Length: 239
Length: 265
Ligand SMILES: Nc1ncnc2c1ncn2[C@@H]1O[C@H](COP(=O)(O)OP(=O)(O)OP(=O)(O)O)[C@@H](O)[C@H]1O
Ligand SMILES: Nc1ncnc2c1ncn2[C@@H]1O[C@H](COP(=O)(O)OP(=O)(O)OP(=O)(O)O)[C@@H](O)[C@H]1O
Ligand SMILES: [Mg+2]
Ligand SMILES: [Mg+2]
Image 1: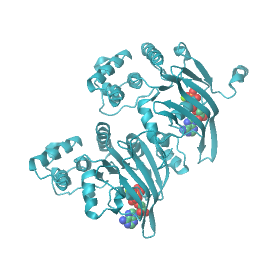
Image 2 (image 1 turned 90 degrees about the vertical axis):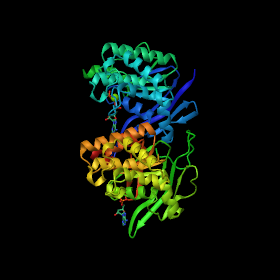
Image 3 (image 1 turned 120 degrees about the vertical axis):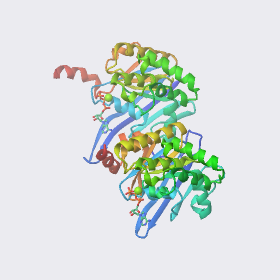
Image 4 (image 1 turned 120 degrees about the horizontal axis):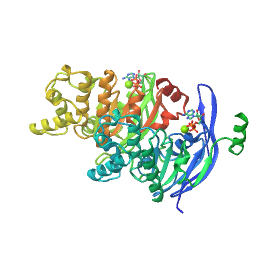
């Protein structure tokens, strides 16, 4: 198997200077991930699932540990890589999918979805054609394709967001609850696309509120709840 | 994580702009204390920091309007060599006129208020040696169009235009020669909120379509967040933190940055 990620003894906390305190989010996390593997992150609210994904993406700075990413140019520690390298990898190798679209004024839905392909060098017309295919697949009405998503409903924006985030296969895909508040048909389209990307070798780490949705994709799980092993017992006692 | 100057990077492109250890004092006021910055081609660097922290001074240094006491500044461009702070006045003027564009908060600094708007843009082209009237007018018009200036008003002097329109003329002047580097000092401050959004929109569009390398200073963290790939935080003439824009805003490390981000969001 082709190794994609080696996470070693990764820890993250937040120093809140105004309170003069430091709060741990997670500590000493280690795992590996190969091409085509799907890792499910579990844990109660506040366990640090989103924080771990953001740390891997470098939106958060790791406190310690290593995030060795095996890319086409070699192995790079994302925890310490130069900003310019992270920007480059985000454009070509590492995707982050949330439920929220960052719409831009006066950029049409189809142009927004086509953008990752355009940036990777695809000709304009071919990229637009692909974009329309994925807008269709996720159930965005054709009359909206040329319109500006800034005016779309929450659900419509979310579908545009997924089409854009998943149009270009990437080596590593981080997913933070992408199915939340999505309708059934769009959810099915998402699972189909993820299965296709996985078969093509994309490694994935995801948080899903309803893991049942992705049950067929899951290879491994990590529970970030502190003392996860005894956690269920304690829940029973509390309830 | 800030990029230290000599750190090997994966990306094979070289930085367009490298400034190292730039210091500048005005009498007893130390405006810049060893400021270093690296900007890669197509990148947008945002600079934030409290009033008087040295942001505009640094930008003026990058525009070669100011000669620092110490430090070096290089641009990786054909025919441009050595420490640009060592250039003489004439060489500076030529370099700025042809390769660097700047937009000031105050349009009076960037424009001749009584000349026509198209004339203000054409002046840039004249400095670069263009003399054919039809070409001047055509190029000026195209730069104004790219800045989304209503070209039916291109013969009106900036003094007769709204603040948002004046900023568009400055922008057209700055991009008329397709500069390698665009510097923006509070380009939307002082405009009405709705006009601010429109100017910001134009900047975003130019950035997406032309991949112009930019350094932008603003008090408005929303503006910086919308436009920047990377952010540098200044305080009392020093850089206290720099990193990817989303990281600096979501996971600020320095106490001052936390205060800034939490106060303004
Ligand atoms: N930028 C931040 N600054 C300070 N604290 C943060 C920040 N981001 C997250 N935290 C804290 O870290 C902890 C983990 O939060 P995180 O969002 O990772 O949880 P989660 O597992 O994704 O929870 P949920 O299921 O509710 O989404 C929480 O206590 C949260 O308040
Ligand atoms: N030409 C000058 N002569 C004397 N002092 C100056 C000059 N230019 C700047 N200064 C001083 O240098 C310091 C930095 O000023 P600068 O204009 O760079 O700050 P700034 O970060 O742009 O602030 P602001 O956000 O208010 O625009 C200030 O204390 C200022 O008074
Ligand atoms: Mg979360
Ligand atoms: Mg200033």
